[in-house]
Image (cartoon, rainbow, N blue to C red; front, side, top):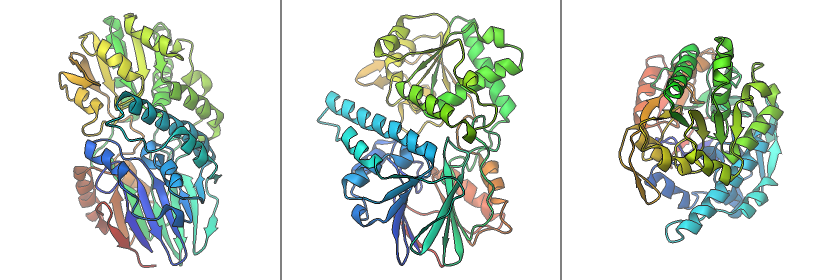
Length: 449
């Protein structure tokens, strides 16, 4: 078996892994490159394989850095099944349509600088190839068989167990926390002769969940008490629902619900509105503590129209504003930053990873001014980062997941991490008897089966 790492190799974006056996050629994920200018440019490079020659695709979850180039794959000739869990089928539709819409809007703003990868019509053409696969169900494709198991990262997220010639390759996808707020913990790992493992936080330990919740709530309420606005950049799918659930459930648990219910909370993302309904339609995939009331509470206001969104810039009441995108590079949050970043009463509260060169990273590191479009905006806001709300598990989460194995794999291949995280996690695992490889972008590795 040969695996070529067409993305997420020594970077945290563009997951796309080309697998070849004697009988089959297939992909695990086909994501968009996000982040730096250099990384985004990779979206326009030709695939290093023939899309029309692929037999099938396995999609681990719906995040755009894992799913975002599927319409381009179909546009260039792919016509096979795209295996995914039922929740991912619903989520990937709204996310890909949103991706196409953003591209078209950017093109209209500056056609000389923007090249559209695909349109909404291309997305609709892609959706016909979705094929549902429930957790733990085995599927045979030629000389391989595989199943999806709960990865605990996002609604419907999965890791892949793949059998070939009597051995097992496990591809982790993105792995969640043992103590995530919405997701159940990842299904324990039972067997892996070879393991391809994400490493986003391979050199970091998240704070305990109780500490995270307290820090989030205290930071929010401190700003509200000073008559300020808290802006929380959050991805529409997963993170927004988690932050709303965290605020409401912590207030209820600590006997502070009356206090919290006096604070207006605004969710400003059309995509988040759709995603929330999908989350609530698949509550059996989530923890028992997740209910409609824990995400859609009485003091939550939804900005459904652009007029309602823009009105928030003139509403200077103390409030919490949760808006997308999570890295401040697109979406309605760009409407709010010019109005609120110059104000010292604003708190920019970061709850997720900010990639290098993203606008979110520039704001987070207190760069001032920052450019939003062509507008220079002073950054005078109070900048706070609350750690641990990423959907990615930390080093100990990742390592503990591997401890379900009776012995380390013959080979552990680390992907989906920045250089320092990969190197540190590699050293950590090697001290514990793992044979570790860090593949380069477009490198092909042969595994003995």
